[in-house]
Image (cartoon, rainbow, N blue to C red; front, top):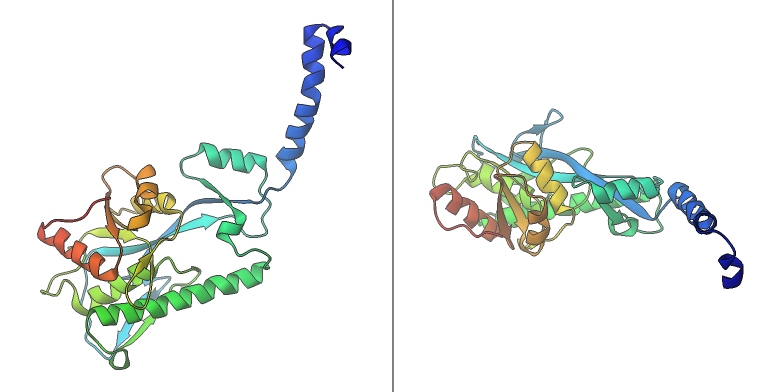
Length: 265
């Protein structure tokens, strides 16, 4: 092989060598790859209406008129059956408002689009139930005396749990001294919630901070374990507050309102 190549001029050798590479790039460029491409998604103020329906409805207890906002955040990803090619992946790697993720890390493997949609809906319902339990426990209220309904159409998964719980706390108790838990600020965030108030990581945080900044938030609550990801593409002027529990998040927001010491990422 070497002897045969040695008889060729350099341009000819390079041209022949390039043929399989070009062919490979052509194949890779059109073949679907096992990735999903995500970008900043919608945000929704849980203290207000979404698509004409209150996100949080409470019966059996008086509620407060609130100011400020508590925005849950999302990412928008290519669908589980969408074909993502090399060009999509390359674009996602280059752009700071895109993320390339293994498809199996976004969607359960081996399930149809319909099954995945049901899974995400089920996860949202579980998250909402946990948010209600955690919020009422935070306030020392019994679930059988307060009826809380959460409604957020077209959004699945568990990552809005923390914001749902904070919204319930703000509507029922505010900061506990007659003021708003938000202090009138536009606050966004993300994080799963357990019935006991533990906050968990969610993924896609750098995209969610961008969505929050786009929609006017100046403070972002982030699971403590994801501080580094949240800092990576943080919008100018946005403050990050790490959280591990609902109790800690409430304490941090009260301290922020009152000018006290607030943890930072």
